[in-house]
Length: 97
Image (cartoon, rainbow, N blue to C red; front, side, top):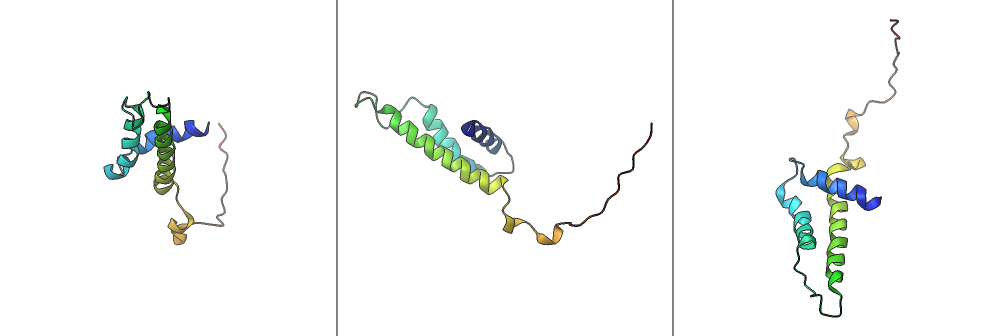
């Protein structure tokens, strides 16, 4: 479930037009490496050809976390305290049909 939500956020991040392409490249390049048939460790060498893909995948997930946090999760210090409205009173009027 965790990776599914991160993948959704990754695609949201990649297709967001507000984010510069140089920031997207940190996710695009590892993603292309994972889906490409070329490996740094070839399959005939001890059968460990999946290790480099696993390392790149873990790197990709860490980059997704950091980029998503940077662009989508507002930190408390980023919020303008003067624009927060607190202690508002309101009344709900019910209309009869």
